Amino acid sequence: MTTLHPEIAKRRTFAIVSHPDAGKTTMTEKFLWYGKVIREAGHVRAKSNRSYTVSDWMKIEQQRGISVSSSVLNFPFEGCQFNLVDTPGHQDFCEDTYRALTAVDAALVLIDSVNGVERQTIKLMDVCRMRKTPIITFINKMDLDGKDVVDLLDEIENILGIHTCPFTLPIGYGKLFKGVYSIADHTLHVFNKEEGKQEVIQLSGPDDPRLVELCGEVYVEEFRHRYDLVTGAMDPFDRERYLSGEQCPVFFGSATNNFGVRQLLNAFATLAPPPMVRETSTRPVDPGEPKFSAFVFKIQANMDPKHRDRTAFLRICSGSFQRGGKVLHCRTGREIRLSAPTAFMAKDKEVIDCAWAGDIVGINDPGFFNIGDTLTDGESLHFTGVPDFAPEFFARVILMNPLKSKQMNKGLDQLSEEGATQLYSPCKSAVSIVGVVGELQFDVLKFRLDAEYGADVALEKIAAFGARWVVGPAPEVAAFLREHEHDCMHDKHGLLVCLFPNEYRLNLAVKNYPELKFQKTSEK
Image (spheres, helix red, strand yellow):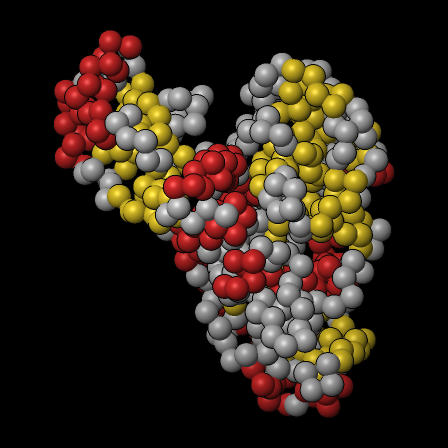
């Protein structure tokens, strides 16, 4: 890896991932507060004079108290420039999270101390492991009565399959949570929920008698037992193992009460890697290369509903670019101008003059970009690893007001470009079909069509085993289409897809048409 430009070396690009309700969005708000880009940390479900969170900017997110789309947030901290991606935790929006993980160099995994390791966390860790993403773990909600600390560490190692290295240890928990002890520098961070204050006390070590004075003999005795167990039985921190995704530093605290958050941010500034080498279909790309390269990992419609805009999110992989510079769009071979690149604070955008490897920026998309597109200074490249997902649930889109067909069609086209919803045109019907990975996406689609495009629709769910792209010689494809025309449709690229009603029909088609391939994913 080449020597990095100072601007690139200070970039830290990471995602926050967790099971729903583990405190992910709350943690994001605290990070922004420490970065001094917001004056008050918001709340997932705002009431009376409390503000909403910055990252949950969609109306449906504010109403339901969940994240349904990843948000990008840029902020400075301790000499570093952070690019943070706040991802949805709900499994029905997992494809947005998976794509976001392709654009980051590290991840923060949040675990609820009450529930421990949960199902969605396991799935997200599988993606991190597949990409060898370095992770730091924060065990949240220590101010609630949760599981034993050693049991939580065992769960991380046994269920998530990664070695742990605690950097801090809690003293007490629940209502009797006293604070956290930093193993590296032997400081005690005292927790006072009533006064909302924190105090950092320097100690000589875990046997310092002041610990008993501050926390009580019973809690200190339990803490010392954990300390001996952790420092004696667990491997010391190894940066190389961390960077290869084999070992994770572990921190404890409470995001709601802002306890342990600054220590966590400090750890990301010192431990998380700067921009890493990225793979393409032809060669690896080093972030220190002078020439610009980037890829599109997300498209978002209507961040400003008044202007019906579409924004393509770019992860810059090497070099830098200046506002107004021309780049090559590798898929089409066209030269385009990046006239108004923007930095993000969720839905709020600010035009910037330059950006560096590691940054995530937005560019206006007039319907030109696809997820996975590569932009360069001139070299023809294609960054690999941006996933495409086959839908599992399908529905017909029934327009309630026929006079709104134009609005509905525009909405379906634009929202399907974001990647979460797949749009299909049936061969024997004029009624569009949509496919999604998770059923809750149907609710989001219906809500956004109405709120953002003025098209009230009903979604009539289709009982289906699964969709398959039909690939093979043209005569066999035509014969198959004649026999199965009522189950066939075309995707947005014009490729033939068959929506099989059950497994028997799929197996029969495979038997009767040996020359054809029935693929779970498309090949464009």
